[in-house]
Amino acid sequence: MDVGDHDTAKKWLETVGYYRLSAYWLPFEKPPANGNARSKVFESGATLSAVTDLYVFDRRLRVLVLEAIERVEVHVRSRWTYHMAHAHGAHAHLDHRLFSGFLNHAEQLVRLARAVEKSEETFILHHKGKYTDPYSPPLWSATELMTLGELSKWFQATKDNSIKSQVGRDLGLPTKETVEGTLQVLALTRNICAHHGRLWNRRTVKRLPKIKRFKNDLVLVSEGAQEENDNRLYNILVVLLHMMDKQATDSTWRDRLRSLIEAQSDSDRAKMGFPTDWRARPVWNA
Image 1 (cartoon, one colour):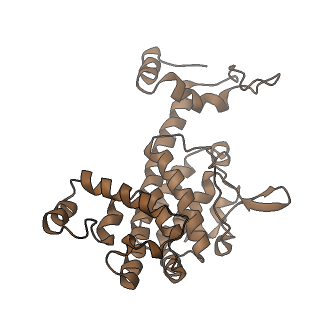
Image 2: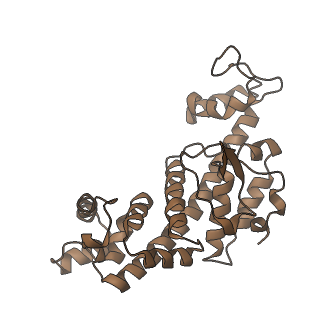
């Protein structure tokens, strides 16, 4: 590999680390032979600057994806809280009868109580200073202490299917099953971003559910005898775009995302699952 200026190369290795950076130069290595995991031999013309450009792109991509997931998370929290509180009261989360066995209700309440105990948030301190019974703050305060993963579990365990359907309509998703599956995949993606993991060319362990109304935008792949959503980043970006459109028509997120994606090579986009005709698909031109 042509590392260019040695001082610059050394600084990259010192600040990012050899192991972390090596994940981004794998595409620049020759294919392995004899069953080896990697060849550790670079293709002709490989440069460190190309590797670091890819690293910077991935960092900027994570920031954008995290921004969108944050907005979706707040939207989900707001709508689920609203519908639950109106239907079942301010402390609906304390009633185990409202949730299925999928959620270990007692365990989640203990987790929530610990979060309340540790919290220095003004709204939590106000509640603890003014109320003693019940100890847990009302639902609209309690959900502010939940992670997206925890919130998705509470949502999935909600027995009142009419609330799930209402939340789905609020988010622009057709069924409670698509909301549940989408939240699970977004929670996994958020964790990757929050822990500064590699997002480019990543495959999620769970696939997004099939969403017929997005069929002209999503990419399907053959899995055995049936077709499933591709589990690379492209499909996640598609669903985020649709969900963002449902809450803010004046957002610049699509334009910023598209500008970032456009600056990459066809090969880099393909590794994220982008189809060759992605520019012509409806969601990118909304």
